[in-house]
Amino acid sequence: MQSSLYKIATSLEALKETPFKKERELQSLFEANLSQIMGLMLVRSEFAIKNKRIDTLAFDPESKAFVIIEYKRDCNSSVVDQGFTYLSLMLQNKADFILEYNEQYPKTQLSRQEVDWSQSRVVFVSSDFTENQIEATNFKDIAIELYEVKRYGDHLLIAPIKKSKAAESVKPITRQNKVYQSVADEIKVYTEENQLNNKSEEVVALYEKYKAAILNLTENIEVKPQKWYIAFKKDRRNICDIEIQKVGLKMTINLKKDELDDPKRIMRDISGVGHFGNGDYEIKVSNDKNLEYVMSLVKQAIPE
Image (cartoon, rainbow, N blue to C red; front, top):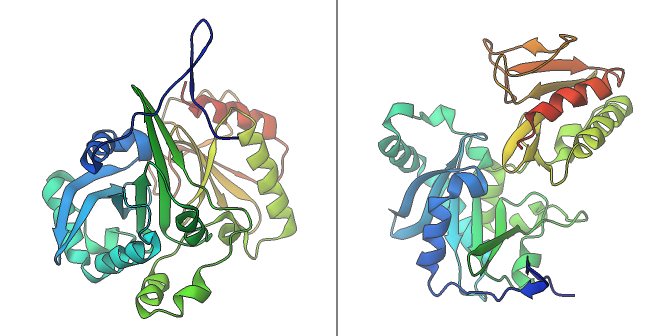
């Protein structure tokens, strides 16, 4: 059955798709709402470098990495070839990307060391992708993402295309191409599997228990593995983060100091110290003794 979008009126009213006539129309809409749609900062529209033009250059403030966004109407071109070409271009011209960011945001200057180039990625946005394009990017560790966007009058449907649970590694394929391999050697796509690797069965089981409890708090919570922790997001906003440790979990709740109601005072105030996760409250857990109470605290960070 094909997906359908309806407007609720006296009876269900089918909404007809209103195609974007030009790529620029879709691009302008995305760039004007980039923070809300993807949690990114717009650096430059139509960024020209080395005889190439990038539709949208963005920056991810959480991963500290640049993101290239391309808008496609040609459904027959290879998103993999283009994606790796742009990633290679970025890695070979890091200074140019930093310079562009610094010119746009002079009050928050970036140094080369502050950028995590290993988390660079390319996002393709289109109203339709072919089965071949979707299958070609169905690797758990490929730094290429697909976003399918459809407009129905004044309604916009944005659907990130997820990798299948059985997706394999892209590494064997990259060894056959020097450009692919050079990119794969530097860029790392983080997964839950990475974070749980070499951890004890007890720690893995504890994580799964806390993960299930968080996902049960409300609908549509996204699990987003990062370099140092696993983020749990709702509407692009971090709710809490879990750092997998040898003997337990370290959790941070994404609320500022004095925003959390914690009558048992089990959370540590980390507003004045450096830490990986988001928010000013942290707790280390080695069992599920306080699971229900901790979830009552996490729930306070869920956007209404």
